[in-house]
Length: 620
Image 1 (cartoon, rainbow, N blue to C red):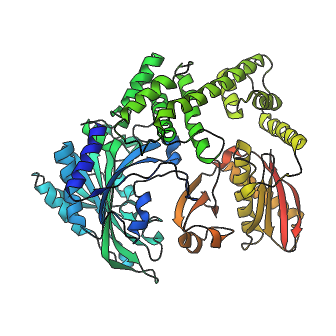
Image 2: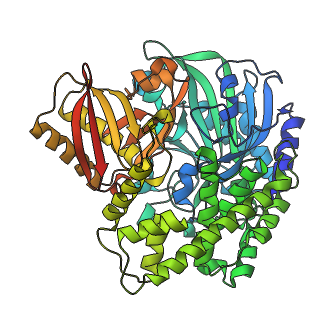
Image 3: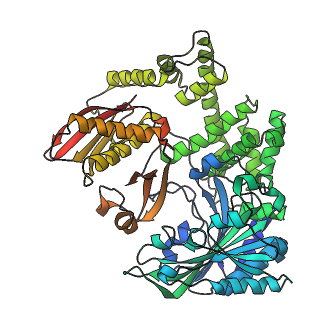
């Protein structure tokens, strides 16, 4: 059974069980200030899981295309993709654990035809601190459904994933109890993180076993369902929303309990063909075959490049088919990034010619079964993507010609700036190509590039200098770096000067940052130096930058995230974290890790208004 057939059979199966099929939400979101794209199957259903009545009733099902750009750096391994499809079903106060577990097991084993001997499951071990019992109900139901297939499923307590890495599993063990890091659902994470008033509960994850030989024990430890190795792949998760967190922090059972179920279409399809590599499934492997044909190279020796191209172009097609066009802003920039990364990886394969026409037609063929209301702009998608490919290749060709002219004497920062300013050849690509061509690069190129950029901007500055929406001039590379550095600066001020300091305003351009903060005195020279040194220390530590969505009250009162306008924020918002040192409500953009920021230097510290100071700083 291929992926399209699995999608069709799943929806038919759920409708035969009394579910109403609902249309998926658009991948490209227009009215949600907290996120750009639909990133999970349950995201559009969240209001109904929180108590709102759904107009289609209490039993719902759909297949939801999703995009998670936070996974972009993981693409290249056998199972991570930025774009994926979630098969979902929901019970809003109707059936509960028994029907859900039995129905999903039936679908996997009798409809898809998976071998029940290779299915393993996990359940919640309970939490004594909050009086939440072990989910023996779910585990016993699992024992029953396995017994119906003649399988004696032993139950074992693992606890944490780390314990599993040390212990592994033993013959006959099939049902595993883990803690809340693995088997608890709330909007904010584990049991301790569950927001007051929210429905929450244990979950039961389902895994498929691809064989013990797939586990890299030296790298990942002993194999068990929650391990990071390739032996087990999660193919579905059943969330049992049966509790509510009370005002005093305790938990009580809900009278009206919900089921939130999601299964990865790509992963079930991989299990159906017994491949731990999701890129071998029918939705993706034709793209790989086309890349082999175009490049004259085989997949086995070029897996990373071909997986990235296949993933990114699949995502680019679905976004363009929903009407999104490449641009330098927000969602359009995400689409542009996918296309450009795919083209650069194609160059690594030796594909120098335009190739989207051949590849996108292969992708679109796999999505013919999706209705027009899901992909309303599919007729124009190829034209949209081809225009971007043509423009980017012209940029690359012009830039490469100029780059090679500089080969004899090496390249300075000023010359990199000329490549970007005159020929549109992006700095990061030019630097990468210079190293690949063994062209010497001046060690101070970044500082010189930024200096040239600053001088150019000063020459063209108008009377409207600094007046930009949200404090950001644009979402370019340097503006993004300065935006991240502003978070570090605020954290350093709170740590070294006064923990009550908050941001009172900011203005960020591509050549400097400006931060206003509450303080009724001037910083001493020693304090100014200490702040500067602290920011640079955090930059040198190369701290990771991550973000996650939370309930507003939880972000403010439990996480204690920094924020400016709590009364204006939506009920769901994004919190950016830099290592363990900064946690702020923010809409981005940010770098992925601090090590690429460069040297931080405070240029001026002055009064802005009564009780408010202002720092201007640069990255060298």
